[in-house]
Length: 155
Image 1 (cartoon, rainbow, N blue to C red):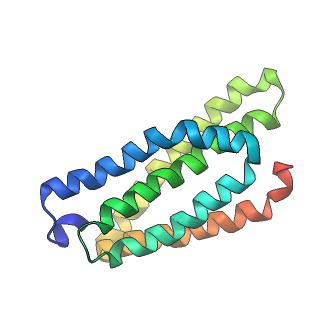
Image 2 (cartoon, rainbow, N blue to C red):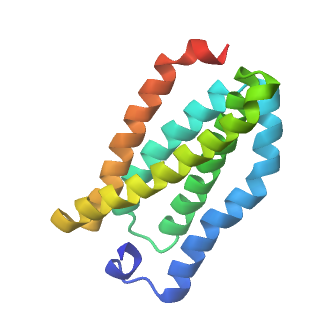
């Protein structure tokens, strides 16, 4: 919707979607190793914080290269948050609880995606597609603040 609304071709829309998944695939091993060295807190906060900016910039994209670039950034941010948060969860628990924790972590990620899509459908029913991204930025900012307040859990 956003790409078509900005007059982008199907090819550019495809590149935009590919940029996200490609950056996820390429950055997973690098960010995993990075989080082993610097800890889990910093990558998660950086990923969330940069996501806030990227989400807020998506509706403002005016040039054809901006949406693929922002979507690539969001792919890297996803890797900074999701697998790193799973590693933090595993480190915080005894070995005998890690299997059930992995299940709960996966369930929460799936529910978050489902609730997010449902919520954004509601936003889209009363506002423009731009507000889906502004709402995502606001919610992600709230999540960033919550994680910062939870810093002691990462030590």
